[in-house]
Length: 63
Image (cartoon, rainbow, N blue to C red; front, side, top):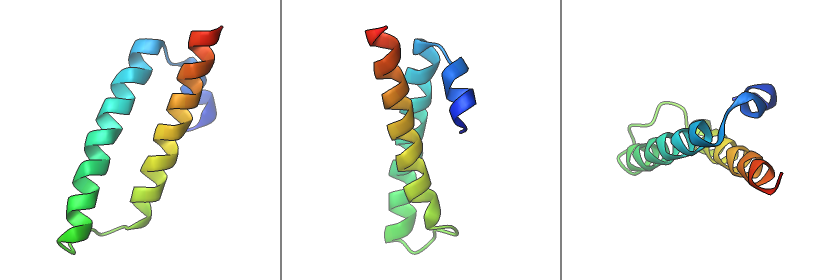
């Protein structure tokens, strides 16, 4: 998810995306344990996206 896309989101959309990505991260971790993951870099990418969304959310709450 790009920075410009994140800036356009509302608070509710950010919360929904964070929940969706956390569930996705949970599934990726299970795939890693079972050696079923096709792209291990997806885990780090998902973590970074969650962090970006949380940062954007904090900026929207403070403003």
